[in-house]
Amino acid sequence: MTDRKPKAPGLPASPERRRFLLTGAAGGLASAGALAGTAAAAGNPENLPPNVADWSRYLGSGVDAQPYGVPSEHEAHVIRRNVPWLTATPESSVNFTPLHELDGFVTPNGLCFERHHGGVAEIDPADHRLMIHGLVEKPLLFTVADIKRFPQENRFHFLECAANGGMEWRGAQLNGVQYTHGMVHCVQYTGVPLKLLLQEAGLKTSGTWILAEGADSAGMSRSIPIEKALDDCLVAYSMNGERLRPEQGYPLRLVVPGWEGNMWVKWLRRIEVGDAAWYHREETSKYTDLLPDGRAYKFTWTMEAKSVITSPCPEMPMTDTGAHVIKGLAWSGNGRIKRVDVSLDGGKNWRTARLHGPVLPKCLTRFTLDWAWDGKPVLLQSRCIDETGYVQPEIAALQKVRGVNSIYHNHAIQTWLVNESGEVENVRLG
Ligand code: MTE
Ligand code: CO
Image (cartoon, rainbow, N blue to C red):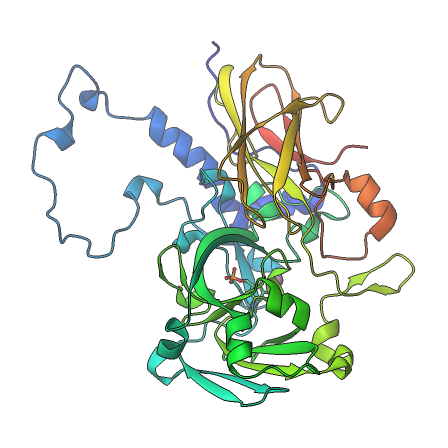
């Protein structure tokens, strides 16, 4: 084995990216990779066998030192990060999940990326109500306690912002998986099927759309067809076993499995049932995809099959030759992931990766491939296939259909270049 020291993530390929790497966001990015490696390498030999380590010589802190537990101080670099120049203000902005630091398919609550249009609403649940009205027999006002008395469901689902990967449509831009793919998270939701609440209010057969509205300062609202509302939507109050976090919509949020994140209205306060005329409402036509000929591609709600290698990646360079686990995540808004293939040569040859169950519908699926690196450059890619038979496309194929005007629904295959020094870079082939 050769001695390879981890360095900061690979050099930027374009001047734009170079600028990005020299600014604050990238400072954090660089230190994430470099610090983790240095800390491991610069350990105190006094703590190593056969010596008795410091922490074995004295009593640890007692049970109440952290009434609400937090990660080890040595994991302080594992945080959501934003790209300050991407948006004008943090209240209408986004930060990104550190996918490269995670195992399994569940995102810890404190690491779920955030996307707000008007900041985080600070809601006292005692004063919060959910109103259901419009084309119903009896309009209703629910307290949060009322909602919890309905039969509950517990389901794992991914949430992906339609703009995830939006910067990458025209070429490789952001040199880190946290930024290229980190607008996705996956937790177990506990909530009430929206169908039960609509039935309670006496849904009229003339109702063909719902409008869901949040209690944040943006009052964000989205229209959703009634078929979806009655199918698998939840009004959730918990994530990963505890109450929703304020930034994820406390105390109530809409869960719209497999569909783009903007429809998952947080701080949910109102659902109005409407008829076909709602089709023309302004809310429905936001988030369209601009096609090459200037027309807009509307109602692109489903998040299509997508996967990415989360290690190695720019933040997780190779530190040595020999045995290594290639790790990644795959997901599809159309159901379960059926297979994931990994290529080491930019898509010429593929090996089937191992899927780590449970493999659930509209949920992240963890995959790995055990691999021995010989120190030669590698073009890493992953490609997933979902249970409908849909195959994740190459970016060139996607661009042929969708052009490069859109910033939404980029689910193309990602390429990482592992160079001889072990650094990993976001590259675009062809
Ligand atoms: N709901 C409200 N009320 N206000 C918002 O700004 N942002 C939407 C959606 N729901 C938003 C909202 C967008 S664009 C996304 S991608 C998801 O919430 C992000 O959910 P998260 O912050 O839990 O990751
Ligand atoms: Co979004």
